[in-house]
Amino acid sequence: MKLGQATIKDIAKELNVSSSTVSRALKDYPGISDETKKR
Image 1 (cartoon, rainbow, N blue to C red):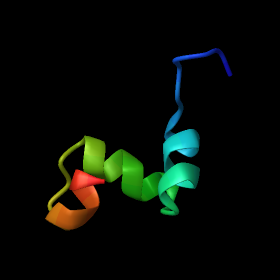
Image 2: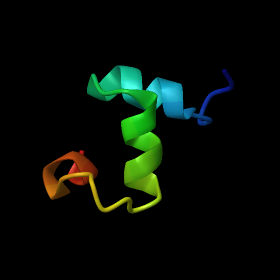
Image 3: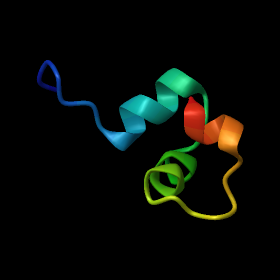
Image 4: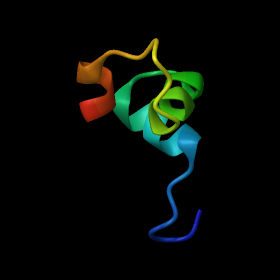
């Protein structure tokens, strides 16, 4: 990984959530809580 280029997997690992959750939050999926989106 290059400096400054975080992947969905990197973000998920850092936040202790699944990569699917990160993807859905980024796409404003309705099933993701506001608290999770704020992370």
